[in-house]
Length: 361
Ligand code: PEP
Ligand code: MN
Image (tube, rainbow, N blue to C red; front, side, top):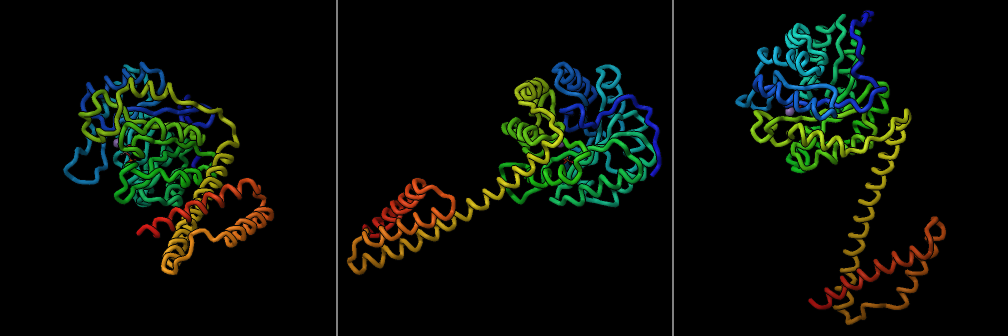
């Protein structure tokens, strides 16, 4: 590994200064749009680094694919005239070379590049011996190793400042999120690479404006180190990702509203453990629901049988037995008798209701 002597005075990707907030348009579109967005974002006092996509990895070929090299001097103006450090996405060695030639402060590797070890290695090779911070978005597929592998490739060539960005994972037809967050993967990342700062990109997770705040807040509550949020002076008319962009002023209000938790060193681990336990609870709840549904199916079969044979719905002896059995089971399982009586009564009531329906058929 080569030793790189840093000429930079600023460390951007650090766990000490939190949260790290990156904001800016999905794409650089025109010089005016780039400068105006930067000025208005800077005025909010709520962000640290300016982002803008120069080369856009688009799913379909006829979409806007970025302004390319001509946008790089616009970002130089943002640095000089607005006083913000700037970051762009790089997807190959040529992008790296151009970004460095135009003094881009921080590079990021997009989700569609992280999936490809050849591309990531090409970028890493272009960065050998270069002192520039790099952020790595998670791959579009939910593969933690691939994400970590990209970071390892950069680390191996000597990139010293590396961060990660959680931008969600592509989903099949689900409408709520544009990219499913699958928080568990990000939390596993934090557990496995605790020294790497991790930012959340609510814009690409949500794909819409109305839930940006809650997703950003969730990331803060899970002790992420920062946020990357897309902001545009005229969001509805943005040339890419129009639905998810917000004006600089809306961005400012959103960050102001966020509750930024304290930075406890071991917090990610604590939070990650809690998330595990909650997932376990969710699984158990699912099982409970399935068991209840199965129980009610049998109850309906019994209902049909009772109806056929002119038997009453309530069978007092049987009910007393069920109740006593439940009380005994509860006592051996750290469950209070009071709770179990309420619980079994509620189930019994629903069973009677379901059988009554069958009797009325
Ligand atoms: C972007 O940040 O505009 C972008 C293309 O993101 P991603 O790589 O997460 O899709
Ligand atoms: Mn975008």
